[in-house]
Length: 210
Image (cartoon, rainbow, N blue to C red; front, side):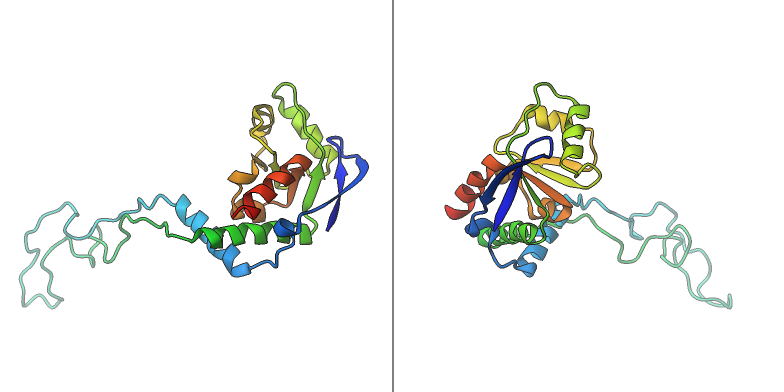
């Protein structure tokens, strides 16, 4: 698959680049992507939820009324779940939601996501993005030039660029990452992925060496 290369102003440079088949030509595996995204979201959960059971609720343990002759059901404690202020039955307890996935499956999931992006024409190739000093206005103008300003956008740079990261930090719909730090969730969550031309070689390095 070939993609046109744009400059940072959104102008077509007239060049086309052939995407590496080993990275962008894989048959997308939906179940692998689902599992990887599920693991990512599970890892974001704190798991600190907690409710008090009847043994943990503050209150008297005195029997509140006699056993027989009241015309009502038996009741031994105000801490019972049937009373307001009592403990909760089978309430949530702190737990760890994370689970393990094999490296090969995670690699397949990311390759599937990248291939799906190329297939859906959501991948934009840019020759370079250069920002001399961190400035949100400058970065926003670049996104507008690339016609991705109003969408959820993922910027993929070859290496961590401090100026680009700082310039994008105030834009809620923009995320900047390097190829090695990308997650399947990031790739699928973005409406457009702006990929620097030089980062394509890094993708090949990462995924063909495995």
